[in-house]
Length: 335
Ligand code: 13P
Image: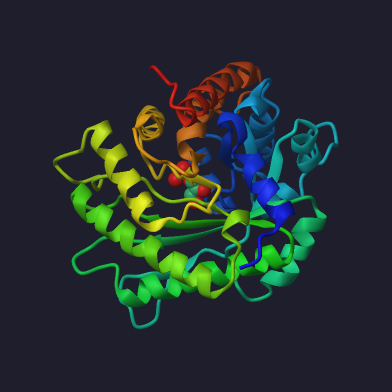
């Protein structure tokens, strides 16, 4: 596996000095659901206004090293005509792009899915790189149910993640490899730990076979938690220990950064979990930071509600949450 200095530098820069990632790559259909739930009309322009508000928040570049965009946003300009990609770059924030095409039912595996989007990916990566993207993201999902995830679901998704990651590196983009074990279900934390470990093991096997440079990628995993429907929600410390144990057992130290997804956790809990993981004793060879979507945005969206006069107040709560998550990435958050 060759090391790739340009990619490794970009990967490290995204998570340097307590910085993390803002995942603002919701598809048009997902962001539309989040906007309409707050009685905000979802139009090309309202989506642009919302994202521009987040990206232009004063002081945010101290906490956010990268932003994941999606196809519509990477082509959009600010209200004053600056491409949003340039707006980010001008503030020292590295732009990235979601490149998977979403999940489809996996043949032969009832109830399970595979992430698609490999067809034509090389050409799309070239286009996105020319538009200014320096990293990419691909998300695979795994549900925990009786007897699931199946071996073929784990294998198919891990294989696709590795093919995506190799293509990204070929085109000079840092791949964010996102295998997400979902929180839906009533399973205990121990079951999530077991499944997360099996998934990570399969993903790194496939990355090795695909000759992906581990130094030039970032891993975006779930934390190890009990399912949403489980009667016993583990205390923060237990989540932190189980998460670090899974990483220690299955993630090679050559990976420069692990940026957790929030996955529907309450935003304060997502901060507390990250802080507790970083505060644990023992070897942590990777930078452990965040790549949160909902946990970073929910409060700001609630305050904004599509009203121009609410922009400063919404930016203030977004700034506060990003500040908290950055402190947690350094193990210095204190509530
Ligand atoms: P959440 O933090 O809301 O899970 O989103 C992160 C993400 O990028 C999901 O793909």
